[in-house]
Image 1 (cartoon, helix red, strand yellow):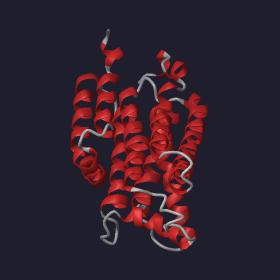
Image 2: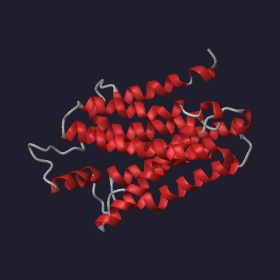
Image 3: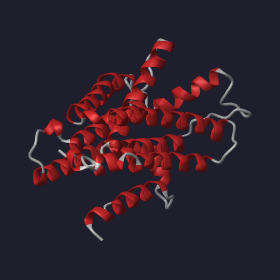
Length: 261
């Protein structure tokens, strides 16, 4: 078995260690965003070390480095959402979302709060961390996972900005959505189209994938935790499966020799 064939093994092991409850689960649910932040220097160290061994082109044309940049931007966004927000509130997004549902009669005995700490943990480690790691792993030969990551970044930014405009108030994550997500997502899409102009269908479809990811994220949460029609574990499984979908899309197109840097 070649190196290319077994590189998925540590990825599976890594996320298995996150999600399989063997005593670490309760700690991770409360501290996952801190662990992600502490991992940022190691991400840069790892990818720049690999680049030093194999790459000689411009840094901002290296899609593996840019994929790390997208993931790091999202980790910083997670800090504002779930660690400490702009006003110093801790784990602010959980209370912010559930307060919205409480306004409409939710978060009571008959209508429980739909967003749980466990849901936040799985949403962010699957739709963000897992997608981001797949993007880093597959770049530059297979760019659709990285395009999907850029799509998640931009769609999430639009959701934060749209909510702020409608509510006329700050929401946890708004600052990083404005100053990190919009520039990072647009730059990545622009760089891909600059180098691979025939990737326009992939860019469009990555946005579709990201929109559907948000539909699944919100709709599944309501079905599992508000309406209680399915167990929360089934919702989590669906999130993980959807996060893996970009790995299997557009591989034949991406892996043609002319699409490599």
